[in-house]
Structures are given as structure tokens and as C-alpha cells.
Length: 345
Image (cartoon, rainbow, N blue to C red; front, side):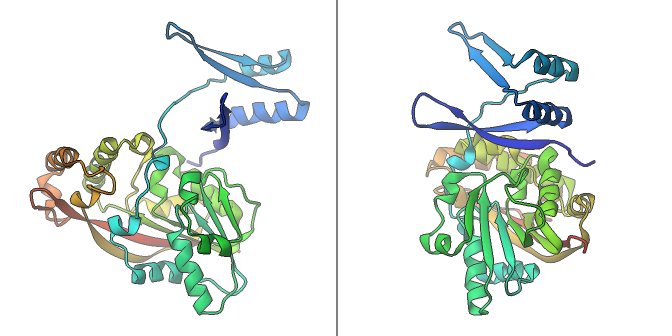
């Protein structure tokens, strides 16, 4: 089913210079409520208050007509206050995922970038994919206009100066509500980003990419895609435990690793055609490889992670994933796939 929700990005103002990032989930009727408020020039203020006794109260401040409309629509506010894992997590993903330069070539091949193309590296992080695209197009003497977009400014701040200087724009934006006009990109790529979006929101990413692509434009995704439900459950549980130990609260809650068989459905529901898997590789991931990069070098956390992995990995799948327990390191192979699809002409 298509999701008709939207995600609105904002900031809670504080007394100091800091801002608390806010993502507001807006349903169909909420969108209509906000549209009418905008049309009438009405201001709407949502207040949450926690008093000294720990009691929480909330209120909606607006003119009487808007308050009546909110009541008629039976609107409900759901709030979640949570640490943003990606404002904490600063790692070199190439060392964790074991991706080589020739693997990134497969990604660039799938995009079929031509001279004059406008390209979006979505959920770009610190720009590893963009750097490769720029290097390749420079060698091929292709002029492109590259946009880089990620929800987390902390990650964008890590983009090397040379890459940033060559980009057309570096934009803070949510893949579920892209800050770009309709039909402006020839190609959009997401590498290892979709799984950071909650399961219920993943269709929104595909709908937004479809919207910003030109007719005939290509959407390319590189993702971890377990083969079976058992593999999916085991891998997800292991990653949740690792992220819990690392203190990445939002990542624990949000992540959903799509199976390979689920990916074509997401493309097709958004309107894409010619959906194809164009690459598959199995990269070995090890718990020891997370020790310094994500567990802060804490051996006790590594021991706890290893004990958890031993418990949650069923014997029935261990041969399938090349499970190897070497005491302080447990490794297994994880399927990575590249899918490509096209927006109809």
C-alpha cells in the first residue's frame, strides 16, 4: 500500500544557540489541516510541557476555526524523544563493509551517467559514493551536476573539501520529503541508506525519488538484503544489539533490512519499471571489526555482543552465511545487492 504520509523537518528552539532536530510525521488528514491553516494564514502552535512533578501535558493553540477542525479530524500527536545515532556515529564504512573500488564501479555502471546529467547522491553520508562518481566522470571527461543530500548535518560536515567544492549543492534533507523540485534528476543513487529508514517509511523514499526523477531517469540502490526471513531476523537482531551497545538509540529503533525478494515490490509500487538486480556480492562482517569503530575499544561490550550473536544465530542458517566463531570474533557473510529501475518515459 502506498504511504500518503509526509515527514516534515524542523527544529525545536532552545534558550541557547543549539537546536534540537525534529521530524514530524504528518498523515493525510494532518496534511489537510496544515494546508487549511496555511490558506487562512492561521498560526498553529503545539506545546508539550513537563512540570516539576514529572507530569506531561500538551496543548494546541490556534484560532477557534482551526481548533474545531482539529477536533473534527480527530488529530492525534505522537511524540518520540530519542538520541540521534547518526549524530554520534562517525565511522569509515569501507572498513566495516569491506567494499572495494571495483565494487563501487558496479554502482557507477548501473547509474549509466551521461554528459550533462544531473545526479543525486541521496543519504550520501560523508560522500564516499560522490567522490567515486566525480573521479570516474572526470576520467571520462563527462560534465555532470552532482547534488548531495543527507538528513544529518554531522555526516555532511565530514565531506572532504575537494568533493564539496565539486558538488552543485550539499543539502540537509529527508529522503521521505526531498527538498527538490519534480523531475530534475537523471539518476538518483542510495548506497547502504535505505535500511536506516523505518519499514513503514521505506515506500515514502521510493515515492519521493520517483517524483524528483525525470522521465526515463534511473534509481539505483545498493543494500544489504538477506536471502530469507531467518537470515533477516538474525542479522537485524545482531545489528540492534551492536547499536544498543554503541549508544545509537535511533538506529536501534529505525533500521529495517529488506530481503532481496521485497525490493522489486518497493520499486514497482512507486511506479518504476524495468526493475533489475544488476550486482550481488557477499561481504564478510565481523564483530571484532566493530570493536574500535563503534564499541569504543571496550572489550566487555565485544564479549557481550559475541555472546548475543551466538544465542541469536540459529543453527539452521549458520552454514548458509558461513558463520565462523573464533572466540573474540564472529563473522558471517551478508548479501549485498544492487538494484536498478527506471521512471517511465
